[in-house]
Length: 251
Image (spheres, rainbow, N blue to C red):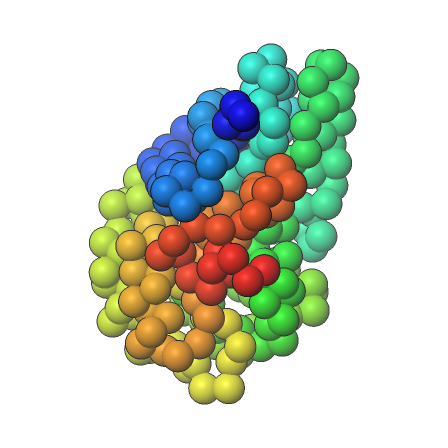
């Protein structure tokens, strides 16, 4: 029997260097334990500084990206900028996912769309999280937008830290091992889940399992939740080794 191969489309900010490494890494990890295979195809939206004006302009460009990727007949699309979605207003991930899906339908290549913002919220709910703490690379005003967005979706944010890195390239260069010290500055008492990176640009995948062992609670990132949602939309088991509890195969 021939092994099924899927095409994963990624809508990526032009300065993002992590989405196309961490998401494929999880899918490649899955390939070591399950038969399905995957290829990855990206379209980019201009964005250099993580500020509201650039995020809004970038989001307007996402329609073009969805159309370009549907030209390649991808099986699912992932939109890679969490804060761009959350800065557009509460619940906006639903609007974005619906609109971008409509672009693929209009192009004769209907495909489901996952946003990292919606994926993070859904991943937390899959894990049954009522109260969380969050690590963000953003400036404090944008971090507060993220906190408010998550709380509007019914998940309480117990504590958070804003690393205040304005340049998106610098966010991508942030050493994930630093998170093993940074998390100690966040109150994790009584929480259900720690979000080690509420940003698909800030790397965290190499330390997810280590952080989970250190804290004794489930640890996720926006990228982990996005991979979970992409796999779920494809109708395949959401599994990836060394990617935390959400991708352990139990969900």
